[in-house]
Amino acid sequence: MTGTVLYEVRRARDQHELAAALELRHAVFCVEQGVPEHDELDGRDHEGIHLVAVENGELLGTCRIVMVGSTAQLSRLAVRDDARRRGIATALLDLADAETRFAHGRRVVLHAQIYARDLYEQAGYRARGRAFREAGIEHIAMEKVL
Ligand SMILES: CC(C)(COP(=O)(O)OP(=O)(O)OC[C@H]1O[C@@H](n2cnc3c(N)ncnc32)[C@H](O)[C@@H]1OP(=O)(O)O)[C@@H](O)C(=O)NCCC(=O)NCCS
Image 1 (tube, rainbow, N blue to C red):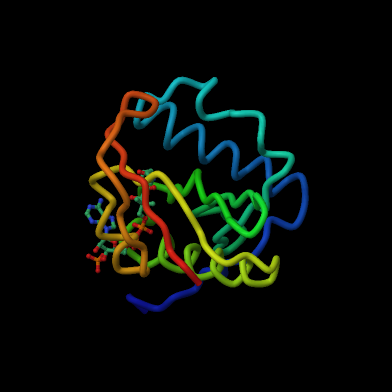
Image 2 (tube, rainbow, N blue to C red; image 1 turned 60 degrees about the vertical axis):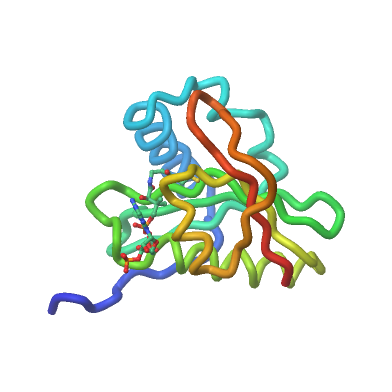
């Protein structure tokens, strides 16, 4: 059946899933996009809530939120290349909203790669300020007030 959504989105439930999420991030950001490993691994994974999209036991997507007061910093949103345009990133962003509310957060902020701006706008984010370079890639700050 084409078009059927089979994946689930939820928190990573163990070290094995967290390791798979880090592997996907490495493949997407470092190998595909050329982001230096020291930028990808910023030392904040231990404070993050790691969300994953899983289908038939395979990890297809991930993102991370780090709570700073009532603000959730969202980053590391990555979907496996053969699983894109199926709504997985959108589903992870929805779950990030729910997790933020659960943590009594009031807003979510992120640095969006310019090419992905539509994804975030469709999820209710608004751009703030000017574009800037981060890890060699053009970004813009975006935020969503919950
Ligand atoms: C960006 C990324 C996370 C999107 O994941 P995804 O699961 O394919 O996104 P979705 O299916 O939820 O897309 C929803 C909408 O966002 C927009 N969108 C998604 N990917 C896009 C792209 N590459 N170019 C332009 N618009 C895009 C589209 O409007 C899309 O709706 P449509 O498929 O009906 O046209 C994925 O392409 C990825 O992992 N890219 C490499 C890592 C990266 O750039 N991460 C983002 C860092 S800011």
